[in-house]
Length: 99
Image 1: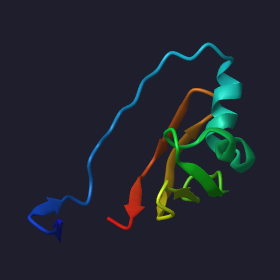
Image 2: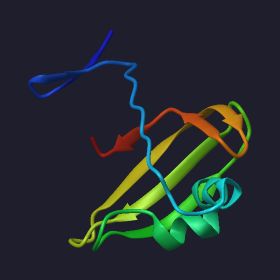
Image 3: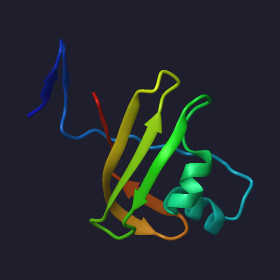
Image 4: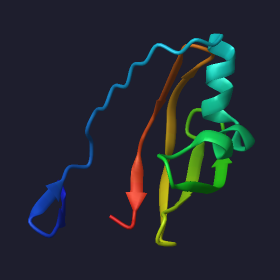
């Protein structure tokens, strides 16, 4: 069952696979995605500031990241870790609010 948002219906589950080649050791990249202090240094597009990063790095553990937009609005991204295989795989759920 989906969630109605205006004229759109968001499904409860969707898959997104992201793949990039990064010139850094796998352990370093894993840390950049999973360590709160590292996330706060790089997270978000240009002109967006990461104001908070919380990570409970275990399967079933939660994460929550606060993004402050240029207009001062804060968007929270959050989810649960589904699979953790250091250093090569990190599977997680993803939600954002507001909408």
